[in-house]
Image (cartoon, rainbow, N blue to C red; front, side, top):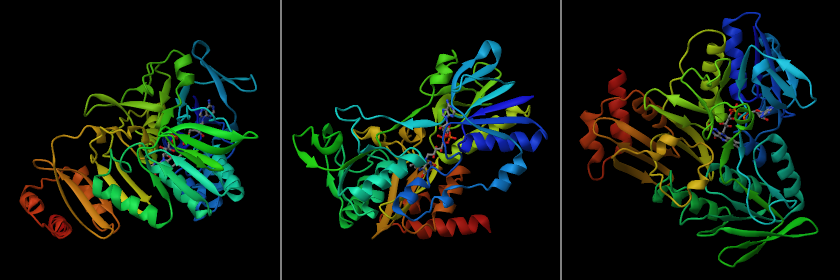
Length: 432
Ligand SMILES: Cc1cc2nc3c(=O)[nH]c(=O)nc-3n(C[C@H](O)[C@H](O)[C@H](O)COP(=O)(O)OP(=O)(O)OC[C@H]3O[C@@H](n4cnc5c(N)ncnc54)[C@H](O)[C@@H]3O)c2cc1C
């Protein structure tokens, strides 16, 4: 049985590991068009700030790959020929498959404004993008960043760390308002401003103006002009679905798969950012653009490709990130999702956040240690933990396990409740 995997990201690697774990000696061929193979894409943010070297981006060693024993080919797949169960590669050669996995990921939504093709307009998608940014940052002085979510903030911090003056454009009245509440947005904004970032609210890009083919300034819709040498954007991501669409597979926003990660062609599977997965719990097909979800989906796909029936059960969204230097964990459903910055929910977002059931918000916060929990009738639905992370593990478990919080609900909702103490006490008793 020949398994072919398109994509050397975390979904493709996880699938390879799963196949190897149950089908000793299986023939596995991985095809990837990223010259750097498998590396941590979340790690790119820290590479940009200089906190991670490029070697530190690679989670696996040569030895790890040897043990797995698959064949890696640097190639771009240009077509799936389903009738012949084969693939066309960019050198025009053909490769047959018995089982195929599309783990093609997603790409940054391109900017659709005049001047978007100028030199100095950058995104943060791949390691090569990060390298380009570092080169340009060495030469430039001022950058403008566009986008309302995590990646835009990572660009802002990376450019700042590289000594650039940064103007950060936000379409709405506050940062990441479809996930964070007002207090949380303000915490992040204040920290950015303290670091020297100039924030521009209600600001949208109208045009990028160049000189000799290079970015020279940007014009905003409100008429303002900002001089700059670099324009970085992160306004959303789009699953890479072209191969699947051209091959006549069912595609919505992502490649549609059932809970066994199988497309409407029984020999073809999809996983990771490219896939839109049927969730048997909600009965809906969901896109999930997170590293952990991609890994779990890749694992399930690999097991199913190797003949071990393994449904993918979506875990609750859980994302640990750093916003303006502040460790922030976002668990479950926390946002209201109707916002003019919707386009900014590019990375680390999960669709369920937009479907918030009626819930009560209880919160406490002091200085930069902040916790917000969303409490339903009997269960906790979501939480945001900023700064001190003591609560993040218990909250994750309580939300994921659907722990009945009736005994502490009133305490949590009481005026001046000491949320952290109540949760820690409850959790300690629960586990003892
Ligand atoms: C800057 C940044 C920060 C992020 N931060 C976080 C975070 O904090 N937390 C989190 O959970 N997630 C984060 N993510 C998202 C996370 O990295 C992705 O969800 C995850 O990498 C998806 O893995 P994947 O395997 O599905 O796709 P990818 O990692 O995109 O891999 C797909 C691979 O397929 C290749 N490919 C595509 N088409 C073809 C073709 N036709 N032929 C050959 N190869 C092809 C691509 O080049 C790519 O190498 C971040 C992403 C970025 C870019």
